[in-house]
Length: 414
Ligand SMILES: [Zn+2]
Image 1: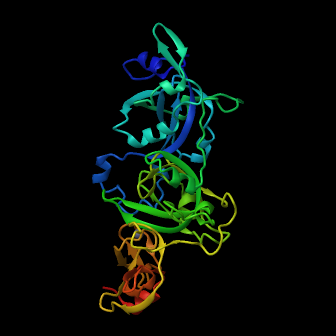
Image 2: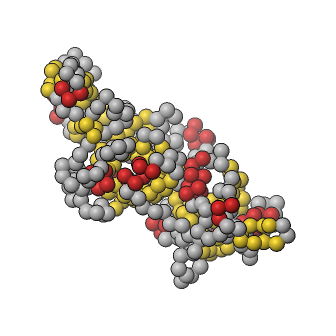
Image 3: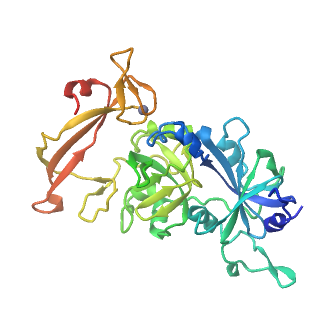
């Protein structure tokens, strides 16, 4: 047994398995999508872009445990799946516990520039809660934390559930640094971009958007009491924050359901979510593979005040902002108005008439029979907005989502 990951790595044999038992603390547990081989991709088992959000990812995800030794060195242990699907909640209870690593294999040494997001998390856990042990000359001594630079590398390890022998009946390790919940106003005002943040917020609006990489990302527009209260919305803070859920962020089914059935945020059944270790970036917050999103029964300070306040549209409003707008309708673009049905599960437009039924569709993207497709509407309206200027006219694209066949039957589609 030793207390240094590096020492155990040095004694690893040709198989790459650590030669010694190592004492570490579990700093974080999260789930990453299981990398699918290109062979599977070509055989058509790869899900098409756009289905990630709607369909469950849990069957192809893997639990990762970020551990740290008393020397400050981090290791990310990816657990091999043992048959059944991982239950993230069960593994979350490991956080903060001391444990002994055994039978883990070194997969990769990852560096800061190759794994920016992993190091966002590692940086948020630095400096360690206790002074780390460092070598000084021949002897070892405890250096003061400020002198020790954040690590520039981390080892990616592979193991099984039994590779972590958790200490029994002990309080959280003194090395453990739990995620600190902040209000959205605190996070936005600090403006520490690229740094992990954790918060609880209510979902106001959900939008699916194609990313530059061709993946389908989900954007959640969220708010909390700190942005909705009397002091909210001042200075650099807006009333809502855009949260991007990257495809690499594994969502539990309970979170998908909560987002899918979200009610207005002022109501008592609003969708509250806890975001742990998301990353603040320009224009909002990003959820990556190290981020854990979980449902919350209620807001930390009760329901939000009614009515919900959004920032009014102004010439300075940045793109991708949820804002409010009022004005007088001057006209409608009649020629370009149309509606079309999409799959009610994955929002794909690839619907075909079901062969056996005339009243249903089959989605060729996700394969489900769609009894009631979602109808999307394309409508452009011109508004006169005196609050934006004396002659200000704003063109508004109305993007309504109507469930059911009625509108689709009435308007047809182009
Ligand atoms: Zn579909």
